[in-house]
Every structure is written in structure tokens, then in C-alpha cells.
Image (cartoon, rainbow, N blue to C red):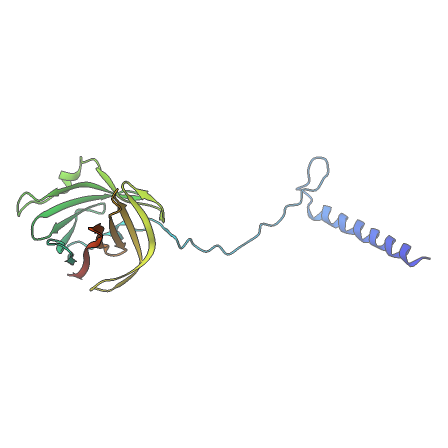
Length: 225
């Protein structure tokens, strides 16, 4: 017998047996016409978390602890140095009292599910000016402070995210994974705010060109008590 005929017959026999096995294995998932619906196994891959995106996490991480007093050292103009005091009223409402030696500002925030909103920003009326939870109860947000998730290019009101992994050296310590927001103006000048989890805003910058000369004002975290 021709060897090619033998090999062909053997191949057909093996194919028939293999097909029969498939029907048995897939019994119960075949279609109504007796056809077999073979389900391909899903390809499993190791998915790494997105490194260029900042999720909300614990929003309270973008403020200091209750009672924390922070000193920011400034350069460029008078009053660029200032001191802040953080006051938590409950788990979702926080006041930050900011004093630059010329004026004290009161900034009140509310933490929502995936964003932080500003309820008020106003000058303190006197030394004993305090904001209570009752004062904030009926206040509507006047702007968004931070909203999540964040990635480069995200816009929050007049601000745009330009980095989520910056490295910032301060007199207090070196910070990594710093979130940077930028506000640009028509004359190409801009403000930048830098945020680090566990501290909140750690630095502010203003840049401009005046008479073809660069002008810069900075305020950077120096100490926390």
C-alpha cells in the first residue's frame, strides 16, 4: 500500500477522534443545532496601576492635621512669607487660617466624594474671628479646589494639571509625587501651586517677564508644628 495513502487515512482518523472528544467535553454548551460553541479562554495579563493618574484616596490627606501650624518662607515680594493654622470642624469641613503679617485670610473647605470645594475665602474681620460648622452649613461652593481623578491636562476651573509626579525640595524635606497645578494669564505670566499628600499645598510660585527680565515670587513650606 502506498505510504501516502496510509498517512492520509491515519490523519483523518485522528481528526475524527479529536472532534468527538471536543463534543463530549463541551456537552451542555453546544447550540440548538448541535454545533459546538467553543469559548476561548480570556487572556490574562498583569495590569499595572496607572502611574500618571492621581485617584481621590483619602481627601483629608490634602490638608494638614487639626491644629497644625505651618510656616512658609517667601521670596520676591513683601508678604510672600506666611503662616497657616489648620482647623478641622468635622470629617468633611476644614478651615485654614492664613496670616502673612499684613492680612489674615480665612479659607473654608468641604470634602465631597471625589472633590474638595471652597466654601469661602475672606479676610478675617478681627483677631477673634472664627468660623463654625453652623456658619458653613448653608454655604454653597464658590469654586472647586481639587477634583479627582487627576492627570496631566485635567482642568479645574482656571487651573490645569501640569504634573502629578514632580519632585520638590523644601526647607522642611524633599517631596516626591507632587501634584502641580498652573494658572496661565494672557501675558504668559502664571501661578503654580504644589500639593503633597499628608501636607496639602507645600509651595506657591508666580512667574512673569517684566521689561524682558524674569520676575518670580515663591512661598515654600519651611516648618510644621
